[in-house]
Length: 469
Image (cartoon, rainbow, N blue to C red; front, side, top):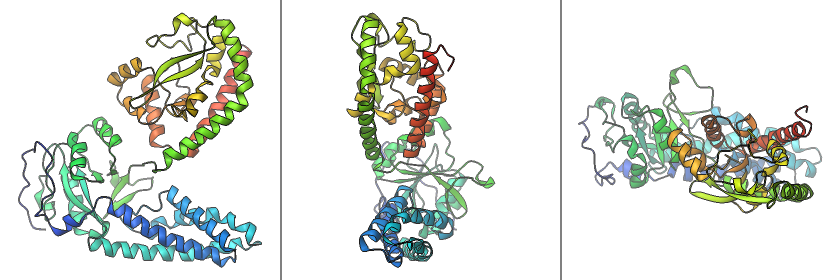
């Protein structure tokens, strides 16, 4: 590759728009084109493959249609319709077949034992459809019809090498649009033609993405501390790929790649994930309120008699980024000790009534928050809400604490089932909360709810029998 003139190094005050004289390939790149257009193609081909496989069993049309829809939902829910950068059927085939065969039980009632025929049928139709789809995607990508611009975060030797790879292999569907780093690229012999410009420092990433409407980011060792980079990437709406540290040693987790360089995609929840989580919250919270109504009524009467005030009290809590709500709890303290800046005395027990100590030890005082869940102010599972005074204080002093507010607060969470509540490390709680948000799934929520029920029952017995349970 011929050497190119160095890109302009003067840092722009504002992010420049796309160069109208840029190469035709750059101009044809469309934002999110690879994901959107390629995904619809794969959905159509997978639906055809599943429909043919279901029809082989001799099931009626409504059963085949149900199997096809269920199979598509499983494939979509596991991210199988997002086209990879490197289209290689061998890497994806085991997961594809597993997702397609999982809903096959829907065919059994209507096929009189012939549902097993779907196994060899899917093993033929699904790979055949994907092979056709990947060939079409490669052709359209090479013609610049399903490509999108990619911003390279890191202008060192690795960033320049990845830019050259993407320019030389249009079948990957990504075009090197520009660099973001503390300084422009230096290894000009590796930069493709046309030379991607330097668009600013790494802290300028949100501005650059918004100004150029870029939806794909590749992070390749920029000159910025990892903690600062994490905060930037958590909030970006773009699809992010990371080049793993020490990638030469291999990776244990699934990944994509570009000409031998692994690219680990950041996991993002699907667009329907918040809706599904909210629906489950409403259903489960409603059922729990009905089932626990007698217990809540009895505890409320006891709490009123023990405290000399109202049975319930509200406390303002931060329940999400920029969201506050009045969280309802059973009263465990006298009315004159309900302060928004008072330290939490859950485990010390200072000032609590005797009943209040039992309620706090068993977490039964949190049960009225089921009403907050029904009202949409909280979720069943999520980072615990904090008082705004302390949330602001922790955010200034604990790295990553503010990131836990990017998901609605919950009655229980990943930190709580690991014993991180009350007088425990706030730093460790923030670490577990951020880990939960990054790894969120419906299965993880189910695990947390089951573990919470076990912990609550054990603590309730221990509180009732003086710690002997």
